[in-house]
Length: 130
Image (cartoon, rainbow, N blue to C red; front, side, top):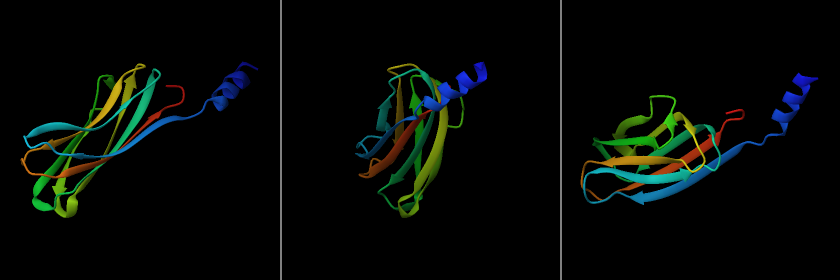
């Protein structure tokens, strides 16, 4: 009976997810800048998924993006690099253990001092049981 109660309780839990789609202009100065940010409402383990594209076309230029949090990253692969040829695009993920009020942030790097837009889609999913 106990196993049935546990499984029934898990079946009643709903997936919690947050999504932010945002276009952010790169600042004129070089360095990291925030592209999107989500603040989680309850403690748990979260899967953060990020896609970033550049409005700049340049085969000799690189798009660098990362997922940053004030929570605890559980995986270490949360920075991606790729060419801006054809606008470029990066996709990455990380697992994060967070408390209520922690944020998960998408960042990009502007090393060119040029005008371009970072287009980001950040999705954060609270894992059931996490």
